[in-house]
Length: 359
Image 1 (tube, rainbow, N blue to C red):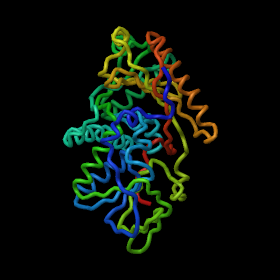
Image 2 (cartoon, rainbow, N blue to C red; image 1 turned 30 degrees about the vertical axis):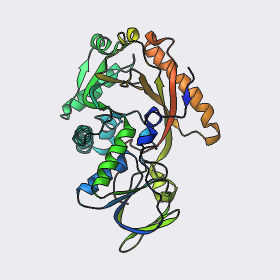
Image 3 (tube, rainbow, N blue to C red; image 1 turned 90 degrees about the vertical axis):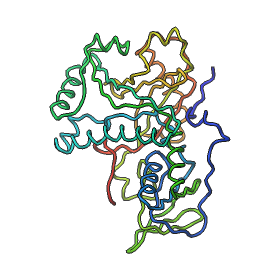
Image 4 (cartoon, one colour; image 1 turned 45 degrees about the horizontal axis):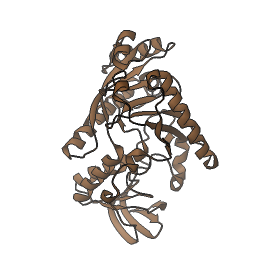
């Protein structure tokens, strides 16, 4: 089997005949609120604004849902990423509790919204299990104890239960609920359609080159057009070139994704069920989940962004490395080949939490 490098299966398998085609932005326009970036955050923000009675305008450099969102792992997780202890150390217990409670509630609210809008994206509820490496059991258990003491949900799993639930050899694990798997590209398109039905407008292949705030409005310069808006919301995932003052808050990073060929039924019986997603405590860590068409998706290899001229070679190497690491976790998949291997860029903040606020 020939591996498709640099291609997200979410985008590759979506029927081209059903892919919406939004116009380029041309001329001078006005808007209540302009949202820069047509990924999950941008499309969800557009829907929220439209429901509130505003007339949002979304401007996307490429195509809706084909940026980092459409190239993600398709996971709604109940936690933000960094450990509760790290967030507490940086921001205090009260703020850390608020961050983690908000994240869990957001995961549940997002799933409820997807169901309410009847977006066909393969949404499935599951538990998230973080398994401890041989040397990390005490640290992971302490993390759970601190969370429980703060009133957050979580359950400790012994090594025997981890083996039963995940088929992995580990010294223990932490189980969290409120996790969901989905097709992120279809979610973006569904949210965009819902926002458009309520008065939102979308422009694709329209790169923003400058944003200038005035006394009464914000002026957004686009290649081929100009927009005046009362408010601009930046949903680009990191500080792109037109937002240089924000760039100091982000570090350019990338991670890698591999989807295997379909797993034969005999092998599937020897692996974890579809009702769990799995991560581990090694660094850099991994996430493993099932897709609805019986493939394994593994995410990992997070590192500083690779120079453009080396990216293709690094992608091939990282795809092979991720498959090897998946094999070490689950030797029963020996012989299974990668069908897709791709990367995704993101902006990492100093504390690992989404950067949100007025600027």
